[in-house]
Image (cartoon, rainbow, N blue to C red; front, side, top):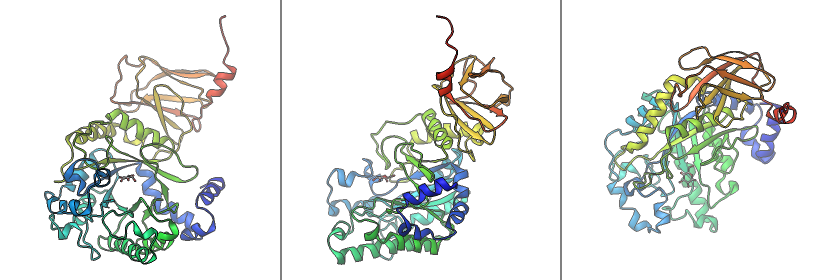
Length: 429
Ligand code: GLC
């Protein structure tokens, strides 16, 4: 991390107090812990809980004003088929993803794991078994890293809201949540990611977030944590949008339709092309893409999600190296291409195929050779001060949903499109 970005990070962390969680030497330690994650770029988010039985979005309890007493009996109906996570993990691997993050408890308060702190958990209700244990086993079986999402906010716990105004309630509730995190990080071996969510209604002091992170790192020295317990953590979490964090790691999380949890009627599916484009946009700016599935109550994955991720996986079979392990890339402007980079190689991801010629404006680095990445076929090109034109290409896109061209350059590929605007010879009239 450069000095500048380190300074940005410190500012972001809110000064020395907040930084004490990551005391001296921790930048090196963070780089060590996060190396695999930076390399991975692509992960699967899984939202699964009692709301999956209803199939009307994971916020259904709140959005439809369902009282706890009426919602709770869903726990009897949540009886998943054996090891459905095997299919999730296989699909994730098929799609070129390298890690998974599953909801161990969403805002509804129902725990998918064995907890000694509540009986509102899968092993003690309809499911009769520890679903987190199954999930961990299935993810590991496919060689995927394991992440736990855990919502701090809890609509079921009696202290979940009054903890904001009642100190005794806060004490009980914070002990409950810290205790559950301890359970999660001691019952299943090595865990790679802890993904906190929604800290309402407390702030970092109220949650005792520093203590929380210290406990987490004490139990799992290699783990990485996100920023949703009101501390900056190891990475930030722009939601439903791609927004690079300055000088800090980030991961854009996104739904496949418009819901995180299973929503039977939500048909706002993203196309495989949109998914690939988003992944490329994240990789270009040094970020990760955490892409969600919302399995049904029985654990089966909606058919459309399988189709979309399978198509993405077929593209990844041919093109994953242009994304995975990519370095941040400073070339960005085009109306029909996205870009990634590895060292001096620029990958031009053409999502709207223009025909025989693909043009990139303002490259200030000299191109030495060009090829179609998937087939390895050489591509002719001409480069002048204003643009590089890749010529003699097929009229129709050779790959789908995005065709990747690899341009070997004589230094880090850089682009100055402003110069094109400023200095371009204005010919003719
Ligand atoms: C939000 C939502 C939640 C979802 C999460 C994913 O915080 O409340 O439903 O789990 O974002 O990032």
